[in-house]
Image (cartoon, rainbow over all chains, first blue to last red; front, side, top):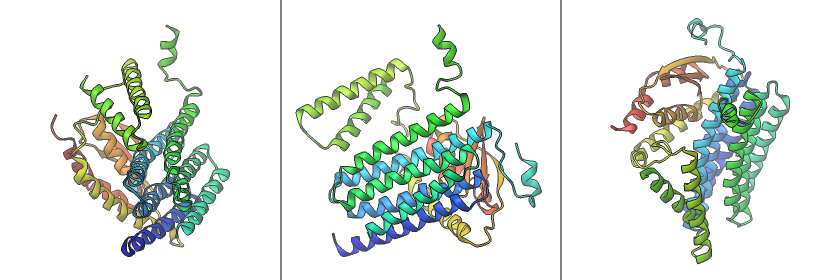
Length: 111
Length: 94
Length: 158
């Protein structure tokens, strides 16, 4: 592995780790279900993309690289889909998003 | 660097587990478990590179598939109480 | 028929890329499972233009880098928001008209909205996407309609 590629891999892995942990903090810290979905979104998009990208720089042959890209593509298709299913199920079960009280126009458009 | 990434993923998984145990609604728990699952996929991939066994990536993809299907099936079960489509129940009678 | 053939090609390609073993037995097993899946899918009657990506395959080349860049920007914003000690969020629900004509285009649009952190598509009512946004800025990002136009352009003309 050449020097530049190794540095790129480290940077990507480090950034991906930071984003993953931030998303984890978000899912614990944010106040209600719908806002927590944004926290989960961070780890699912940026955390996964950067960590798999970092691994991609270290991949020994093309087949490993293809597999990493396919895992990434798969995660990028399924994670919003399951997120949407989750939000719809929550709405259907009568869970209302907690909205900002200071915003009158936001509350007027509540379903 | 790989071991640092692994620790970060494990911390994220622990935070997701914390949310899964805190709740308060069942959807928070499913969200946390779904996130735990996608982190597991990343963890498997990182372990594969750490131990120099790229065949772990195949396990990762299978885990991602099972995780997705599992979450959708669970949501459907919570919503309808069974795994069939609403109109499928009557179709099965015929 | 066209979709069944394209599904078969897609499955065979996936098998070859993932196995990487060019032996007679493995290739035969792959061929058998691809044919079995095509037969199952045909029996289930779930093959239509949404199942096959033939017409959709080439245009995302420009869309994906743009989407990744948007995801990066939104991620940094939301990450800073989560880490800030005051947690200055103002969640809101907005509705956006989606100009897509096909179901697949609508799915791509809704999923792209969810992929950019700060906005999550929580429901689809006809041609309107209901979106939960974390802040005023992220809501304005969707309401500008840039993504809507890009996804509609992605659909092309049928």
